[in-house]
Image 1 (cartoon, helix red, strand yellow):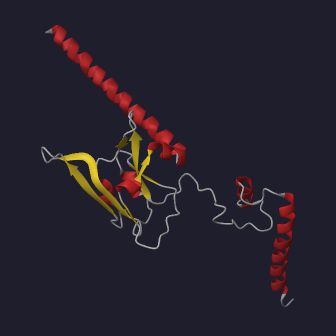
Image 2 (image 1 turned 60 degrees about the vertical axis):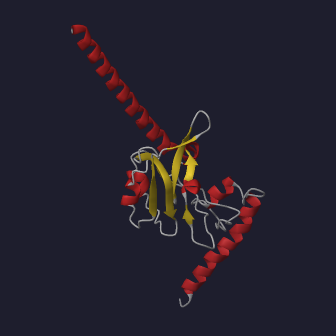
Image 3 (image 1 turned 45 degrees about the vertical axis):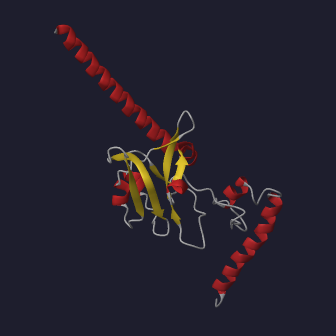
Length: 210
């Protein structure tokens, strides 16, 4: 029948239209602006309107979601921010669009480089969010963020202060990854301690024999 496809399409639209009001009655007071309502409209069980009302509502991002990188720092006993980055430059080397710039710090007495970046800059407008910098970092010092609301009217370039975020924040956005990394770090430290103890014991035995 000519026009049957159009009628079917209009039928789907009408069904969605009616189901929207039925769902509003069923979810009275909690369909919009609630985590439960967002989860329902994001699922296969959604009926009626399933549009998320951004920016009042936001879809939860998965743990592996990645956006602009950030620098991780640990909190010292006195509240000092101990940055993990040693300014080795590996992240800048592997970056495909070359959007990372690092300036190393030098010891004022010897003039030799020290493991602390004087400047760390990422051109966000160039960054392609690939995550290679975080993947190749040997010190777990750079990670991919979940914050995607960074639109601005001008050039978006983040410096060291803007990029630094605590290890606690990283644990909040990526708890599974952080637990795996912490377990690996602990195992590595225990292996080092066991090796050092074995060397000390061997040296003590050699001293006794002599």
